Image (cartoon, rainbow, N blue to C red):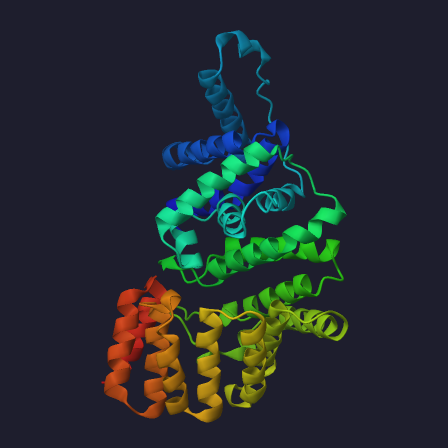
Length: 400
């Protein structure tokens, strides 16, 4: 791993911890978030030349605290100068990130703003990455983040865990945010790496904290199980040269059996004792895949039934695409191609590389290799992920 990549990973991991510590000390989220961003930029400029400090988080906290004081001094009268807080180094606490997550999901914010702000503050994603994750324009995401910070300031929200009677109202946004963070880590939407382990690991850690606090919440359990069952396949998802390996071609002996067993146990308990929800259904689908020791043993009819339920409980473009793939395994590629044509007309899927990739897969199954090759190439041109691009181009090359 190169020095710049290591520093980038370190900054992304440290960002929410630093922000949590600074906001807990000073309280004003808007100013603190700006100050932390400036500290991260300073580190990105200085560390490659000067070296990474012995305690990177403490360095970032000190710089962010100084930046915050400088911001306030530039905005307030000189007579208040002595009243400004001193420049201590707040310590990082274990629950800071979860508290920050719940603050970003404050009820004063709209659901879409909660998701965007939390992905920025807790997940460490850039505005462009958030836009790709949410399938909305980058400018829209920037506006949502700015409005969200303003509303948090205007609401007078404190950096503290909400009482139990308010916690439930924030959980829908919290779960969705963690899911999106995990997805970005599991399959990065852009760049040279397929995985960004720091994001998926952080999402799992925060999901564990939520599950420990709310053991009877079926959807929190479903979300944690889904993450574990998906992440268990990560060791087999890439070849030694970094190339993407599709599910059907993975060496299943490399899957993490411990994570699979834990995920299956969690989702089995949730399905038997809690109200059914979308994350539980997705975890159940992942469990069926993970329990198949060979691809041909996958219970596709059961997966299709689960997608039918998921389409009722939580319809969406990716659910539609995944159901089309399952349909092809059960009823054949021609039936699935007909449904894909309808799905591709949805605005959220217009021009999306996954539509072309699924169409290529179905055409290949149907034996139309020339058309499949064209669709694989189209999908490769549309994706921003270099591993996905290389995989799609390789699929096209095999069909000559």
